Structure formats: structure tokens, C-alpha cells
Image 1 (cartoon, rainbow over the protein chains, first blue to last red):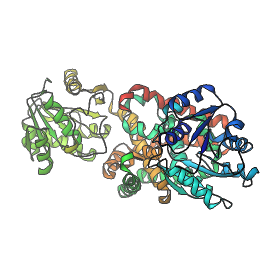
Image 2: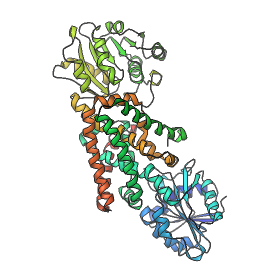
Image 3: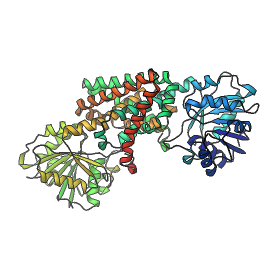
Length: 288
Length: 288
């Protein structure tokens, strides 16, 4: 069990649906209320068993919850958090699952009405599939979830939210919103930007000669353009900083190839392999 | 059956071993002779059933074959082809499986002694695994194999080699060595270069926050550095040209992000997704 009795999930897509399904299959809370803007998403989530109740009204759903999890696209999370806070009962907690954190945490602010407390969160899980129909109760098992407490976060709130994610199987890490955004710029946002540029730079007539290497390297470029536009916009400076480091690394490789410096090319490729293989050995079973 | 009676495979690693296994499981030729520089590789290939005979002598193996397939690393293929040609019986054919073609085709030359004919080849198949122990009889099923005939190639030789690969399940495409190298620079060599730069640009302290996106985008950087150094060196100009196109695409994305031009960022990401999704729809079952 978690310490929460009723969890409201605002936005029942892949992530929100998987949280609900994970909670209900494990019997971790008494009620899961799905809040959505479209009847159809709520119907799918209910049929799947990801939520026990549904409502189209943020006010109605939030009023019954002691934890609200906001799972809407990054660009609207801050507004949705504020909307939910306005209706939460005194002492309720609220969190989110957005891919960037500093802008959201700043927009929500520290001091919320009614003794409601917000802690930012980000589960590093997902897939190209979208919607509650793709939800999995075990989506977060062995995945990292980052929580971003602020200077005013209460220790018991952080412990409760950590335990919430741990009970879904996740490995919880805590850091500042800025540190999260800096790291994710390098490990998620830059790879997406680079994959998009790779796809754009591949002439259409060459596509027939692609194999698994190209497919792997460009796979994330299949993601939803509008979602990723929002992510880039909300982590612009860290992404540009990461891009500068990438440009430097690529320039070193380019110069070594231009100069036909076999030793330097082999050294750089060897260093890259070593860095890459550090991750394979972390968690080989999930190929993350 | 193919029109070949005895095939010699020079270099019985993953590719050479898979050719042998595919030929023998399908009963396509009478004998498969494995030629290698190390006793151990030959022993593994023989035990696996990938070859019927083995020899450490290129001269001895080539002398018995009506087709020699050179499967050694790119940087030594031209030398190995010439060594085999010197011992081939009159009228024999020879081909290779190197990842680049123009340099090899030029180094081998058009006019070979003894009426021996060479046609360059490249199966777009493989994996991070290496050695005959990883060989699969179906490695080439539904995979593209490129053949690069020259102005002096005889039509019946090209037909025989096409049929050889088709009988292993591959889809054969013919083009010039230059066209092959230009396309592969974009679809294979550039993605490898970019993956290496991505791995190098990821700070070690951020590695714990990698998920499937980073893992997919950098997977090819786990490849053998020396093998890829040779591939880059043998296709240098086409790779640098591809890199220029990539730099242009990445610069357009960077400028749009810097200017906070939401419309342009969304458009570029949408174009990239469209290009990427063309390939998914080609061959969804293999995720190539």
C-alpha cells in the first residue's frame, strides 16, 4: 500500500494509464480517478481497468484526491497543476511526469493555497506507442523515476512520493530540477534532435539501403513532433549547451577523418564504445 | 541449387559463417571450404556445420573453388582477393562482402589472370555479435545484398551471383560501386559517426539517466573501433559529404530552437518523422 487513499490521474494516456493500471493491479490505493478532456480516452482507460472512476471535470476529480498526478503534455502541465491545485482538498499532494522540470517547477511556484504541496517528477519510461490502450502495469519496473524536491519540500512528502513510485517497481532518484534538465538534455533531448537531423540528412533514394543501424539511430525521430517541440522549448538552454558538446565531439572526429589520422580515429571510436558499453552493462535485460 | 559446385569462404566470422551455414542447410552447393588464418575459427565453423572442409592455406582453398567469397575486414579485402585470384582455377568467380566498394573494386582491377572474374558485393546484414559462433543460416533472409558490377562484368556472371544470394533469401540490388558508397555513407557510416559523437558528448554522471532513446541512438557505437576506422578510411569523401548534409540539417534545427520559432521546429521535426516512418513501413517485421 501507499499512504494515499485516492489518486487522481489528469491525462490518461500511456503514462497516466500505466500508473493507474500498476496501482490497481497491485491493490496499492482504494480509488483511481481518471480525469480527461476527451470522453473516449476515459472510456478506454476504464475498460482497461486503469481507473475506477472517470470525470471530465478537473475540479470534481481533484476535490476527491489526496494525490493528483498530472500526465498531460509538457507544454500544459503547469496550467493543469494550477487548475488541479485550486480544487484539491487541504493537505493534498500533487506531482507530474513531465520530461523537463525547471520551467514547470518555477511556473507552479513554492507557495500553493490550502496547504497543497507540489513535487516535480519524471519517470524515464515510455514507448513510441501512445494512449491508454498501450498502458502496461509494469511499465515502471526497474525504470528510473526522478523526483525534484525544492528547498521548501517537506521530507515526509518526498518520502511518501518516493514510496508511491517504488511500489510501482521504479528506482527513485532525487535531484534539483536544474540538474535533471541538464542531464536529460544530454541523454534524451539531444539524441532526439540528432536523430531528427540524421533522418533529414538521408536522401530518399538511399532509404532502401538502410539496415538496423540507421533504424536504431533514427528510431526516436518517429516521436510526436508537437510533443518534442514543447520539450525542446521548455529546456532550450540546456539543450543548446548539450548540442555544443556534441558539435565539439563530432568536429574532433571530422578533423581526424579529414587528416587520415588512423590513430586518432581509432582512439575516439574506442572512447565512444567504452562510454556506450557502460550503459549496456548497467541493465542488459532491458537494453536501456 | 546454385550454379556453383564448391564455394570457398575466406574469413569464417559472423558473415562468412552465416553464408556457409545457409548454403549447407539448404543443400545449395556440394562443398563449402572454410579458409582462415586461425585454427580456432575454422574449428568453430566446422563444428557448427558452416563448412565441410577447412584449410589455413588461401592457395589450397582457392584452387578447389569455382566461387570464392572474401569475408575479411574491409581494410584487407583487396589483398585477400588478389591472393585468392592467384590460385583460383581458370574461369572461377570471386566476390566479397565489404561495407565499402569503390576502393576495393579499384584496387582489385578489371583484368584478372586466368579468366577469373570479380564482382563486389555487400550484404546489409549483421549484428554486434562477432565470430562464426554467432552465425545464422537465415541471416540474409529478406535482407538487401548490393552487387556492384563494372563495365566489364559479364551478364551471366552477374546472374549467377545474384542467384547465389537469392537462394540464401536475400533481395539483390545492383548499382555502381560509387553509388553504393554514396548511399551507405548516409545510411550506415554517418549514423555510426554520429552515434560515436553522441556517446562522447554524454557526461558520465548523466549515464544513469539514460533510457531507451539514448540506448537506441548510440547502439552502433558499440561496434568494433578498428573495423569502423577501416570503413571510414575507405569511404572518406562520401562520408564527409554526408556529414556536411547532416551539419546543415542540424544547423537548421539549432537556429529554429535558438530563435524560439515554434512553427519551424515543429515543421522540421515533422519532416524528420515523415522520412523516418518511410522506412518503418518498408519492413516492419524486422524493424530495419
